[in-house]
Length: 247
Image 1 (cartoon, rainbow, N blue to C red):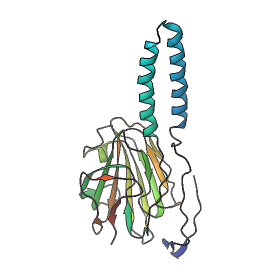
Image 2 (image 1 turned 60 degrees about the vertical axis):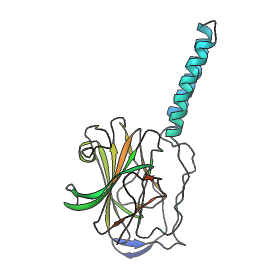
Image 3 (image 1 turned 120 degrees about the vertical axis):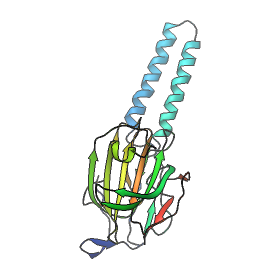
Image 4 (image 1 turned 60 degrees about the horizontal axis):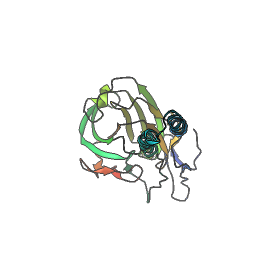
């Protein structure tokens, strides 16, 4: 999906939006599009099973028990596919905002050897199956590259998951020319990573970056000069919680 935005160019590789010119994209849906068909088909299946059980048994009890269990599972899936309508309140200049709902599991210096080949400030968010699994862009900027890599399906909170699990890497250049790496990581249950980011497209906080199904993780690699604003164990709200400030 491509959306146009109004911006003031500063030079060839850097641009800055004014507050008046910055146009934020808002998802007008309450249920994420990645789950609409699954929720619809599963609801039809539950109704069909309930009707079948009513015809099969003289007592309605089996139908009631099975329907309650299946409906509870369906409601959990409904919660999982929620698509909150959110705006970041305030100026986004030099801010890094949480790309996902979840919990901070890593805030540390780490070697990043695929792209930067040096140490970076790594902040990781673990998303449980109960979290919203939509992902947002953590900074305003321009998408430099998008790379999908196949891999394993270790538990998402393990350190080796960042490099060994299937993941999608999105490199973003901020208006000040700083490169930020966002990594969507599949977990033990997550088997599908969806990335909406496209190379050479403008991206903004409040805009959806992608979606990861079931438990998973998102890593953000920042310059060592960035000041973290979160601590390990802290819950995050995607597009709301400030992860760090860029200097």
